[in-house]
Structures are given as C-alpha cells and as structure tokens.
Image (tube, rainbow, N blue to C red):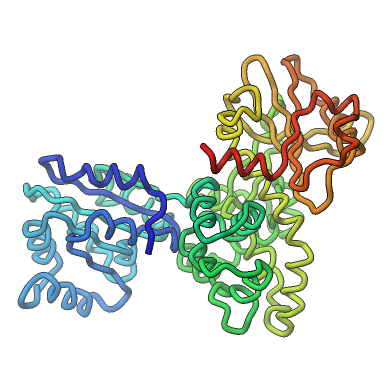
Length: 454
C-alpha cells in the first residue's frame, strides 16, 4: 500500500530519536485518519500496545505477556518494566483507560516522573475530547507531562487530489469525492477501484451491508457518550448550511443556553464544527456555524436525517442524495476554493495573496433579503470577491450581472478585485460582455492547474 502525504509529521517524528531524553508524545485525531498507520510507518520496531475495553485484569495480563515472560501484579510494575526496557513505545487508543481503569493515569504520571531512561512514549487516541481532557486539563494527573501534542488532521484538498489522481480520477470527479469523503485516508482508499461516483455512493452508504452506513454513529457516540442525542440534533439541524445561533435554536426547539453549550463544545472541544465570522462586517454578532468535516456533513444530511427512509426504503434515500448532491458539492466547493487560495496565487490566477480569507453576507439595501459573497480575501490595500458555481451549465452574462450587483453592496474603500469560478466554464457572450471584462474568470481546468502543477 502506497503511503500518501504526512511529510511534515514523518519528518518531525523521525527526529525524536535524536534527543537524549525521555519524551512523551500525544497524538490524537478522529478515527480513520491514519494515526496508527503513520506511527507504525515511522516506528516499525516500536513496542505497540492497543487498549481495548476488556476488564483491567484481562488487559494487564495480556499486556504483560507481550513484554514479559510472566504476569505483572499491578500497573505500576508493568509501566516501569515497559518504559525502562524499550526505546519506543506506542500505546494506541489510550483514552480507553478511562473505561478500563482510570487509576492508570495517576500511576503512569508517577512512573514517568521517576524514570530516567531515554524512551519515546507515544500515547495515541481517536477521541479528541477525551484526549484533550486527559492531557490538557490542569486537574488531570498527566497535565504538563507531554513534550508534544500532535493533532493529526485530514488531508487537504491538494493531497487528496494527489491520492485520487493516482487512482485515475479526473479533477471534477475528485471534487465530488472530496466533498463527500473529505481528506480521510481510510475513506479515500475505498475509491481505489475506480467506478461511477453514484454507484460508489450507493455501495458505500445505501446498500444493505454498506460499510459507511453507520459510520457517523460509530465515530461520535463513543466521543459524546450519553449526551449524544443532543449533539446529534445540533449537527443534523446545521446540515450542509451555515447557520446562526437563532436558526439552530428554532430548528432544534432546544433552549438557547443548551444550544450555546453544545455549540461551544462542538467547536472548541471536539473541533467538529467551525465558527464563520462575517468578513468586512464591523459587528461580531451574527456569526454562523458549519460542520467542517465533509464526511460528517454528508452523513448527517443524507443518512442520519433520512433514518426512516434508510430503514424502510433505502432506494428513496439514495435517490434523494443523488438529486441534491450537486447543491451539496457546491457548498463544499466554496470551502475548497478558500483552501487553495495560496495555489491560485502561485499559479498567477489571482493578483495578490490575501492576508486572510472568509465569507461575507449582509442585507440588500432597502430590502430584508440577504446577499452573500462566497469567498472574501483581504489585504491592506485590496479586497478579493469570489463567486463559486458548481453546476453543469456554463455561466451566463446574467450570472455575471447578478454577481456584480452583489459586489456593489459591499462597502469597502479598498481596491475591489472580482473573480468568478465556474465549474463548467462560461458562455461565449460573457467574454464579449463589457462589464465582465474586468472579472477574473476560472473554470475546473484552472483549479486543476493550480493544485496539480505546483
């Protein structure tokens, strides 16, 4: 199996052995993201232990047999032997000790403080919230003991392009796939045998034994515990849109204080949703929230929210997803464009490299209706306004006029640069249209050039 990406992580982890000291390294990130694969790749000779949720007596006996010809009586003796007799140790799904025996954290802290051996102890976990609590909460025994904390993130769009391109996919197909599966290596490997995208969706999500049908539930119930219904309700009602607090309160029917609690934890603690500020707005009020994990975004929109159809008429659920997939992909396409702004600049497709990027919305003057600018890039002297269209027809002069009208509502004294990115390109009339001549025009081929040739 080819190993993709993780260049920086491999380089950093590979240098740990050069230090003449003990090092505790915490690695965490959502399931399927490739933590174990990365660590075994960098440290093939490390002592590897996996914490499941058996009884503490059974687990201690099993771990003992892996490092010693006998059985340790207690965790302290086990950890002392383990850390004094191995150069590199990986303990996977470390957060499971919360369920097995949470006294382990205090015991490990004591042993770690005592030992003087040069050892690299890597503690790896899939549940972000639990791992943060164990190592970043000042009240916990292991607070302050780790030398490094590595939050392993999914592949960015450029790396996903590299992977899927090697499987034989065209750029348009890659955008479709990335919109559903994000940059999660495990999910992208499902696409290795190239096939029709709709057929892949059906096989992976909607068939009776589809491997990803229950994936969202499996990922999050362990993370959220008994409060998972509340978190699930918030995520379902956010859906594939950007929602403000008022909308989420109305759609869930929950009390505002409870919604605020869930939103805060989903954003700051679990890193599943993200806050979207209104660029160019002087007010900090009215921020929106979106699900930033593409896979969970798709799963909550088309699997969880259609649970009845999935149970009794999966074909109808599948048809609903296929009917709406272009709109869904269009929203993710905006996020893709935000993420590749540096590559658009390097490819000379935009004239400056913004200091920051985001989104802008506001009220149309004299109306209650709202206008939106899909992507905003700003620097000290200029503002870049970008419209993104993911659809199967070419952009018309009317589309251009509507975009420019929205731009006219933006009140900013800096130089205004406009760009229109259309998946299917532009009608011939657009290039002869006087008002559109100053607009930067890009299509899917330009996107491919930006992310593949640099």
